[in-house]
Length: 458
Image 1 (cartoon, rainbow, N blue to C red):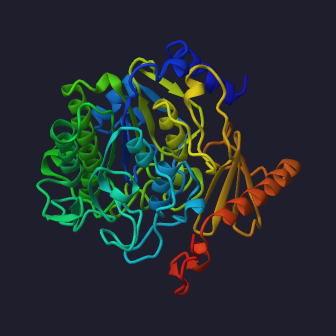
Image 2 (image 1 turned 120 degrees about the vertical axis):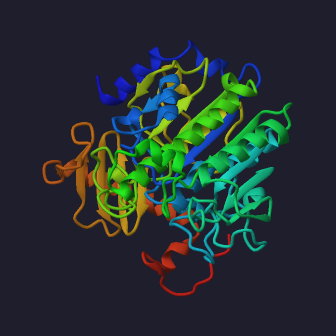
Image 3 (image 1 turned 60 degrees about the vertical axis):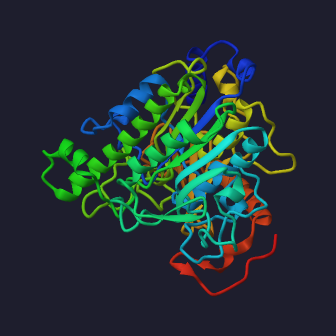
């Protein structure tokens, strides 16, 4: 049995019979998309970190499905966020790199987003947390969260500033709010709770995106979480580990709120991260863990984009299950639409796959291959085989992830025919994606824009 077939077989036994067929028989589910920032694959207790204090996420994993082959769509933040909301590769949307303040890069109004489609279908929609999908935040020159379908939003452009401690750069529905009343993640959990309990229309299903800043630096952690990690002698290490606990506690607050409002059993919840961990894992604030994967954030090797992925859908997913099914962030868009009984927008090229057929024991029809690109490097995957190269496709490397998840054995010289075929298909795929998206990337060096150049009108 192949690894892919084994993953599907696991899913067959973990679901209620005929889940895909009956998922939308009654009211469509509420949806929560909880996104951590720079959380590595090996950070949580449920992913093997025995020193972690992450009780809420560990419990959540025991209540749902833990994905062991889950990926962000890019090894940096803005592109992976664009894929979650559109189901499209970042080079299609134009959000191909992280977006500095003042940049012309943004998620265009022409992109059809998940909150927009859900709102049009009768959902109440809310975003709280990091946005980072435009360079001109809270300005009329570029679309803001409300322009992409959110009824209510509380957001920052990029990082919580000056740190996670009582940040001062949040904007609520277009109006700056001043100093926050708590550390970033707990503050976001309280905002989400208030919206769920007092602001939303309880007669409607809801879509809630909670995108924390933790554990992205500049890191600051409340004393109540630092105390839990008091035995750690290194102050930077202690603050980082406690920051993950701060994130975990915020997640727990949100799950408790779902229980309190009677929505837990009718809500599909996704938890994941926007990319792998920052830093080198040994010094400075970047102490995130990759779980033994190669490299880290900003890399197209596994450590840059293989991330935690946990899904809970009571009555549809059997608690405490695990799957090797390959999942990428762009899959959220078509999967949520299918769960809500909605069709994907016609004429729009999607890179994400609807995962619901797998829940009923069927195959996942992936419309496009898995493809990562950032920093002048590309990675391309077919099944368990992964190709890594620079954008010129010189000196390509080839890895069998089924046998070598750490990408330590380059098989390019042993598999020349496979390599040649994958290179040809990668060239075709790259050309197709580049032909659709705006060419902002042509004027961009990996340390910033090469020169001022207006975006091609689309």
